[in-house]
Structure formats: C-alpha cells, structure tokens
Image 1: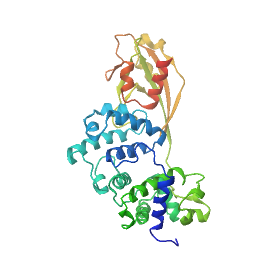
Image 2 (image 1 turned 120 degrees about the vertical axis):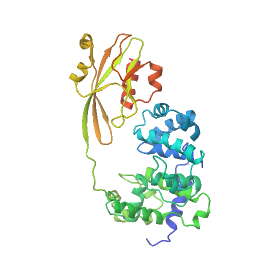
Image 3 (image 1 turned 135 degrees about the vertical axis):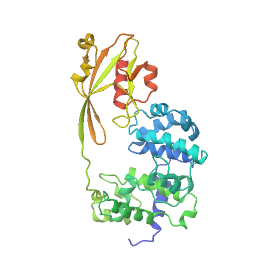
Image 4 (image 1 turned 60 degrees about the vertical axis):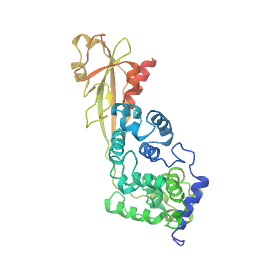
Length: 353
C-alpha cells in the first residue's frame, strides 16, 4: 500500500469528524440500547425511513426494560411498515434476554453480544465499538464494499471461506492499540466506515474524488471500483398471486387474523389470504357472492419474491363472522396493530375514500 499500517484508520477517523454523518438521532450517544435499536432498524432499511420509526419506538419503549415488558403485538405494531419482521421478533426476544440474563445491561463485548437473538457479528461489533470502544471490525454491506475496494479483494465473498478472509482483512485495518487510546477513535472509525459506504463509496458511480482513502484504494487505482465486491451467487426470485378478502362493516371495522409462523408476514395481523378467486368465493356465504367488489391488483416486492395481491372488498352484516381464526378490528385498533405494509396501505386508502 505504500503507507503506514495505521494511516488508513487515521484517515477515516479524521474524515468522519469533519465530513461524516454526525447529526443522526442515534449518534452522539454511548447508550447501547439506542445504538442497538438503530443498528437493527438500519438492516435492509434506509436512514430516512428509520428516523421516524426510531423516534416513535423510543417514545413508547424508551429503554430495554420497557421493550422487554411490552407485548409482542405492541412491538410488531410499532414496527409495522418497516418490513423484515423477524427483526422485530428478535428485538423483543433480545430485550427480554438482556433483562433476564444481564440485569438490563447490555454486554460490553462483541463476543457476548453475539449470543443474543438477532445480533450477528457485525452488529455486535458496531455496538461494542461505538458504545464501549472495543477494537473490533464491522462488516455490513456498505463496509464490505469499502474494504474490498480499498484492498482490491477480488475473491468471491459469496463463499464462506472468503468471507472469513475478508473479516481478517477488515480487522487488520482498524485503529491500532496506540491510536485507540483516544477514547473516540473507535467510535469515529466505526461510524466513518459506515458513512463512507453510505455516502461516498456507493455501489454505482462512487465519489472517489471525495474519498479520504482514495490514495490507498486498489480499486480506484485500477479505475474499476464497481468491480468490487465480487459475488457470484444470485438470488432466485419467485412470484405468488394472493387474493385478499377485505371484509368490512358499516362502522369501519375490518376482519383480521394473525398470520401463522412460519410463512409470509408471520405473526402479523392480516386480511384473510386465499390462493385463488375460487377459494375466496368458497369462503363467503352464498348470499354475499354477488357483493364482491374487485380492486386493482397491487404488486408488493419482497427480497426474493414478487407478491401479486388481488383485493376483494365485501360488506358484511354487523353480527357476522368471517372465519374461526380472526376478529373485527375498528379503525383505531387496526391502526395500532402490526400489519404488513401493503395491507396497511390498502386499509388507509379505504378509510380515506
């Protein structure tokens, strides 16, 4: 590389202080609860979206004890719309475990943090370095891009053996013990690596001229930063068509049931799902067959699957039930419940119509 071992970390630390993101609501704190909450929310979710959810979550669950004491339904309700609901279920389990096994105090090492539900190696390292100054590397998607480009790491990171090698490379780049004597060095470095990946070292058209480590970057010297990281495995996409029975009453109530686990939208409240139009018709009393209103199809894109949703609205009598597994939810009730994002959007549009 032609430069001292510590210079990479020093450049990142210096850049973060003056050019990194320093005004996010989960920054400028060493509260592991807030850092952990933000790290879980930021997985697969944009910062602009997380801001709103983060504030709402803290308002209802200001600390780990409050989150542990909340019901899972309440947690899923707060999470509703963020997607990837396994994160919310693990969040709740993790809070309960922190209270039960660690007296409400988060462990101070990445090694122990990894024993908690939903906390992987990179998230554990982010918490321990940002809150406790531990000298450990993070390697989320953004940081993986920075490290592979700077080092010219062209092994296929889809392979576990190469992933392990990349962890070793990332660990070699962190501040030295001497550099980390500055109490904020690890915080600045960890945050700086995340900031570089999110704002400068972009997947497409990276802003190399603004990068503080551009002089050390192998990919920049090669003139092909977008070549990295190398990943050969591709996700196989699938599709599914689902018919939604939108049963409603005159008082605005809708029929919802909790989805089974495992399965699509597991643990969330949802309109009854059917595999076909015929199945939906068969679920209705005969006298309501002619009362079905078809709404336009809605495409909902998941990570590995495209869902084609076909809403069918049916007005039910006040005293009727739809099936054995659900119940009527008045507007103030379903708005507070954990609903899949497309279902919430449909219901909100219906309420506003």
